[in-house]
Image (tube, rainbow, N blue to C red; front, side, top):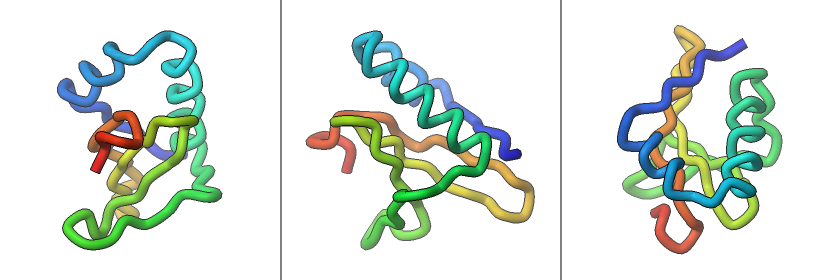
Length: 83
């Protein structure tokens, strides 16, 4: 079981998204809490070390810290704007 930290700025991004997509994103966040990382991709370049989880047209970008089982959400945004 992982602990997911949602910073204030990321939470504000989530509030701007319509409720149908919010439900999908929160289900993906629950998957992160359970440790389900299937089909997540490691990012490259300046985002190296971070991962992304696909939620429809939105992406959940997160940082996984293995030592203490903490996942910090970096960004939740439409796929055109996330990177």
